[in-house]
Length: 355
Length: 193
Image 1 (spheres, one colour):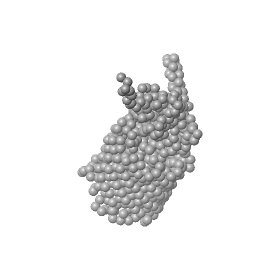
Image 2: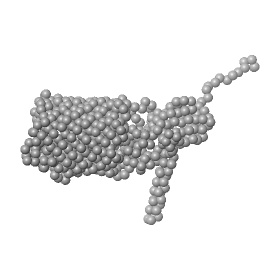
Image 3: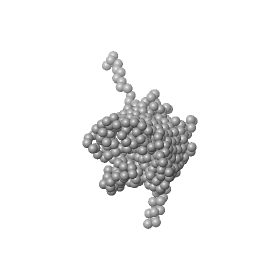
Image 4: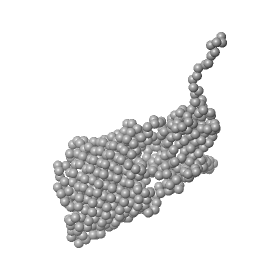
């Protein structure tokens, strides 16, 4: 096993650390799944991100990344291929193949990959770092990569929030318990370039009050992208039990509604290889919103309960999952008969290999 | 050709044995904590401040080293550990430690102990970073660290302790090690001339 040595940001004693060059680091994952919608619907009843193909052995994505950090400089480049990593990660940049009339999404065109991260970073001082490029968003609890989530299906808060932001940000680490980030980003989320200008501002305060507990207070605001306030926190209370929480509220530009919600993530490790987790989420589409958020109508809300197991064997994680969503009205889901329903459920079996 | 392959295999075997032998340098102290413990000969009147400076300058990973009492030096440091295998360069975690060096009766006592493990995980930005500020004593790390990983970490810690000790002993037997005598004036008898 290789080792190298480091200097921590909060070190008040100036030291000279001789570090060995770790070389290029490769990482990535592949994932595949089978999902069954309890209403027997072929098109997903529950309209959160990814894993939307029902009664099919389907694929997520191949994710490939490369990074190097040596001295003060860092770069990361991460690509993904496949449905999860392509059109489902962002509105597909290539819309030449038209629009799917069933769901309004762009039909996947000739593009066959998606950039998940492409950025460079530099440590200006021991405590101050600057990073610029196209990066995974700092907002929210869940992420695009299945390696970063406990549950295989995603929350409504994740689905309707930002996935990536292009911009430049500064992060100051007061200590390993407190850091502050501020940045400016392109006018819209999830696009490689701005539509008009760089006009979204964002900030993140990280605090770690006690060992095992980290909390992030996030804000992302722009006249074209809207404003989201977000709290993301996780506490490893005991060796076996971890509790996560995500709460957010989004206001669309021009007072055009938005969404709000909260999700709780208790997880319990029953053994070294097996962890059980429950996600309980409440999500509301604000009344003034002019459209749907994941098939949830303006003024409606949904409660979603997801029971998931992670069974690990080396780099492979096997994920069985059951999910039940219950909306306020009968407009969001459909029964097997085609009649509207207040509830929907699904069962999924996924396998994720991370390297 | 066979001769070359045999030599290469023997070389690999020797290197492997050397690497694993470093684990034998580690022990458990009276509190059942993993410890790198060495006692050896020293010189009288060690310049502890200079030794602290030498260790900080030449031993990678030392975050602090300072004289805390007469003839005693304390500090802390750490090292990153990486995954091995198909993909390399991925940080698996960080091991922190407490350092103390004492001098008495022309001997030194070097102790590295209180090892704690912070697991790393790939985050959303594609870099490997500490997981939720989790930090566990190495002795109680079985929930995060397999037996094979622990053996490998103890190997690395043994090698690290050995390297730190060598840096220290090289310094002790150099000219810089001895505390400078306080500058004094010559005493003269002005009546005798």
